Amino acid sequence: RIFMIKNIIFDFDGVIVDSEILAAKAFSKYLKNLGHLVNEEELFNFAGKKTVNVIDTLSEKYQINDKDKFTSDIFEIASKIYLSDLKIVDGFSNYIKNSNRVHFIGSNSHKQRIIDGLKNVGLSKYFLPSKIYSFDMVKNPKPHPDIYLKVLNDNMLDIKETVIIEDSSVGVKAAKAAGIKVFGLTAGKHWHSKRDINELYDNGALNVYNDYINLGRAIEDL
Image (cartoon, rainbow, N blue to C red; front, side):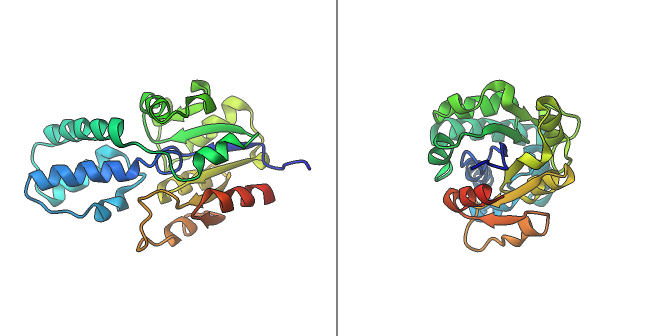
């Protein structure tokens, strides 16, 4: 049968790689060294937000005056954890291996970090660098639609044949603002049981799935 959906644009962190929990780990470790006991789960709520914004929020909350040091320390801890602990989101490998659509990445992360991450977990062959779009390639990051509009325009994609997969309200908002169908995915480990999936619905997700099997079926049905 003819598939309606020919193109899938995946967010990266929390959709392809389980990296959102690693950022939370890094922040939790750092704050613990400063004497603040912060539960990692509390930090999951920052998923999808740019690290510099998270640093602003936490600096204010915990009265951390030297923001530059905080920033460089976090990036150092995070990149070590990223290299050693990065895992693929459950079900993604199987999904991408069997998908014959055109795949893109649209992320609030740096392009080089995405390329390194894909290489690190053995997924490079599924995404050519030319199909990877990151916030450093556009004027405004998500929740602005710039990244997604750039993917559409550069590749002349038909909006009706395209779907976006997102795991954060920031990302869903960006997809919605770009006028592209978006599904929420909560397969990443940062989606713990107490976290409310309505944050994805409320920002415009057509539906929300907690695994790639059901998400895959929904894409077939579009």
